[in-house]
Amino acid sequence: MIPILPPFLSNFGVDTLIQIHDSEIYGNGNGLTTFDIYNMSPINIDASHCYWGEATTEEMNNNEFPTNITMIYDQRDNAFFGEVIYANWIGGVFQPDPFDLIGPGEGDTCFTLD
Image (cartoon, rainbow, N blue to C red; front, side):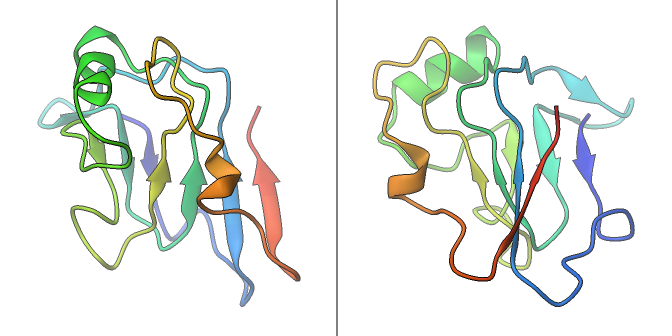
């Protein structure tokens, strides 16, 4: 599982946006629970242009974007956590530009994990 935990990532008093792109994000777990990505922080994650595995990609393709995806734990599951923006998923039939939905604003800090 790819957990995003508050003790490891802090917004240091400013808005932040984590970026994960061109990655395969699926089938992660801790032995008890399996999620593709589990955002347990208040920070939004731009995980656009990623491959999410067959089952999650099918769920994304069969639902209107954005929606609560079963294997993505984020703000749609708990209002205290940040959103995972999965737009432009690889294999997708509907691929909006994620920054039409949300993007860094003036004074925001943007982290990129490569």
